[in-house]
Length: 88
Image (tube, rainbow, N blue to C red):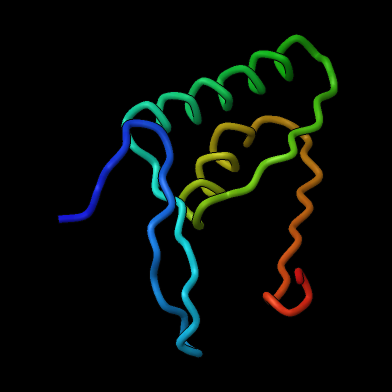
């Protein structure tokens, strides 16, 4: 089977053009780190402090969890999406 990790790992896959790309996969400790980070940001916001979060979401599920956690706050969401050629 595939190798797993308790934190984060990069698993190779192929995109629609046949290029090898890597998908980030979270293990149990990686998920705990992500939950703790969200809790910290919520705590800062609850203290009526402004906070900037620079995060890379590994899938729509992580975006939705951020939205749920921050639903009671005024949030400016900024998303950057680019194809591989632009990033290179």
